Length: 152
Image (tube, rainbow, N blue to C red; front, side, top):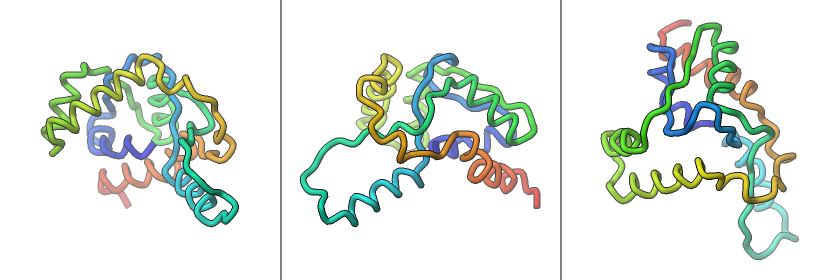
């Protein structure tokens, strides 16, 4: 969810956010605080050993249109989603300081996510990642937008 904060100024100034995915594509989102809570629990659990991949999808899959509606409701102003092309995303990444290799890897990941990567694994840790996007917007995004707009 925190990746949305990278577009804070666009949301505050223009009421729009961008991503190289179709507006109706539903993807899982997780708040960093939930990831941190799972990590802390596992690090403190002396019975947990070894290594494995952990899927932490968050409590719900949302489309970008649904995210825009939730942001609009929370911020009490219209927010819309605009799909951009992968090459536009690559250019934005490089313009923001990513190396060509990092931009290429990000585009490969986003392409895989658009093709269903996130729905290939079981939602094993969904109960441990309870923060909804609406709650995250209220506690994280809204204060960030208020600050960007210079409101008290």
